[in-house]
Image 1 (cartoon, rainbow, N blue to C red):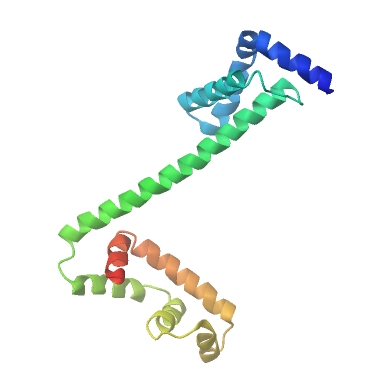
Image 2: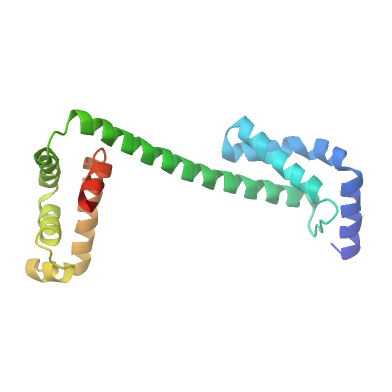
Length: 186
């Protein structure tokens, strides 16, 4: 599109905003709903896009078709929304874990021995090789290279086994992680 067409297009945007809204709103709404799933969230996203379009109608310099421009705006708003939802969900999950840990603290843990027993049981349930490598690293304080040499395996294998061990322990101790983190940092 030439600069002249862009100016004409921008001028028509100012003059015909209502028509543009009626013409494209439902298409943009359907598009947004495919990604955010909620009808209300899709509606909010599309409303935000048209509000942005209205607020910037005097300064817009659209160099692509209006439809492409609108789809790009809606797509970017959907991406922002989804990213935000991931942050909110992670925060809620974190709060849920902390709540569970606090509730368990009142009912299941009466001493440090209880906590130690829970951790030892979780470590004992690790696969044999993972447990051996985990204990050499975390209890004996050996470096991965030392463990690899001692067991006749590669450092990469030690790293992989530690990754497996830590993942399994995180799952096994998920209800106690906030409490354990607090006790370790005391």
